[in-house]
Length: 354
Image (cartoon, rainbow, N blue to C red; front, side, top):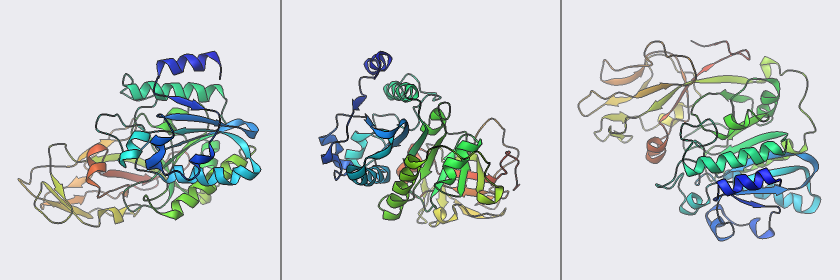
């Protein structure tokens, strides 16, 4: 590492760096990483091609599919080596120990990358240091691996629609979500450096997600270059996030019919990635009947008209939409959001669904 990297480490004292992936890490569960690592750690693991693939895992401590996928990749590399150098960032080790997304005293590790509104918090200093070190290494591409808490397919998320980004995303899934919010996420920060993608690998604990993520990392490491031809429209299902759904901090909610400001349906997460028509019921109003979902626009555009109708005491869609990441997890809802609403788009960003 050069002197500028060393200076950045001084500015972000929580970041640690290692030039090897120790054998004892190959079978160490995410919840036990605190025994081997001192905190957020950036590994440089040499491979045959020098321009590295940057991979981040455990930005949320209870999402361990990425860590297991990296372990799988490194077990295979033990015999043959890596086809390309990998810069591996292992994020929130303390939260992984507690098996939670983020500890109460922490800021979210995937909301504090450059571009965040919380640039003065300690976590943001660490992420700035990581970005500058990775940038100096002239990375080939960037992958951020996540799980989600609701019923969702495996899909890729990106912040740019240019060909290299789309080719990288398609390597993981034909279902691709284009988004501009939330701010401060890894893929958006890395989009200024190299083609970048976030991959959502379903719920924690599913081996299919681990295998899929490991195959994706293997494939990205083996790529020598991105194809020069554009992907045909028929090769991808492209959606854009239009709105973030939040429950007001002081509002109550339930999924089992118990009285609350919002009594949401018990199978809400099974609506994810379905093309819903206006009138689809998300739940009913309880309490005083006066509370409403917060609908926050994603990106620079403004929302035109209401997304929900409450006139009958039910929470109904007022327009067609495709939800994603709707969750029944109270902690995820309070720390992040209830879910997102999307629309189908063409490669040039033209809206294909109303």
